[in-house]
View 1 (tube, rainbow, N blue to C red):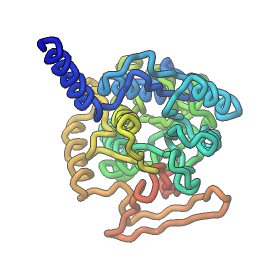
View 2: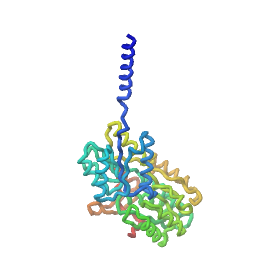
View 3: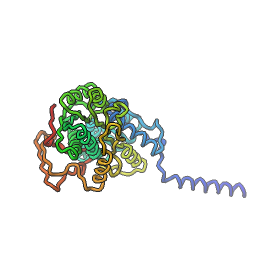
View 4: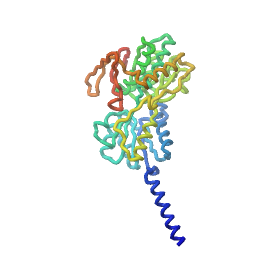
Length: 377
């Protein structure tokens, strides 16, 4: 009789344990793939995205070997190969982090409906109609605006008015970023102008250094960048100029030149998306968050070289962006640009109007060159 009672109790305990664990997602078999345009040694975009991956692993209690990274994958057929390799390794969710990876991700998503595909910076998910293809980005323009305030105040301190910008490509993502940076600078230095030169590469330290040197030689006393290396920072340091960075705190690379950097916390989205897979919940087609959600932020200010009052000015503007009293692309503001189809576009915002970036899609779509910004190449 005692054996029967013991057996019954054991069965009851087993059923109870099974019931308790029934609602918990299993993570041991989860595989997550990443496709990156460069590798973390760039100390820029991929480095910052990789920090997000590490934050995601920690937040979800995953193991390092559950994440498979494909580094230095170009925006070409090599991307398709990398995606197929991740699929073969059993990845249930795959992230690609560069704009040119988008078409390959869409094609793979159409062929593999059981796998989730998340593409940063792109805009192809919504028109694709695919439930397993998603776009994500952050409102980095908000952090760019704040970083521009640091640059503008430095110009005031130097008695100068000319900024320089090392830009990757003439894409909306880049144009939105440097326009926001310029508007932030102009909010505290009304006479500021800015020269822009494109490198036509996301990551090319040699070209970035050459462009930075050209801008500095042209009279730009403070430069910034949408490029992936610390080359603009070190070039500024070597040539008596100052720099505002992107994606990483660049003070260690150029302590006498780098003032501050605009950054993204990719871990917020990566954790959310992977958790959604674990919970078998849908991932939004488009996802974008900013200062309010702490998805974008600034690296610590280099107080040794920043102009007096910089932190206070940044803090005040940050509160305004978060509570909606400050809009980055606010009128009066006009500009002209070129759409993806080659047609021309113009904008003319009146006082009290503003352009609501990232409202209709995650990827930036401000594509207008405004007065005061001079694109040199």
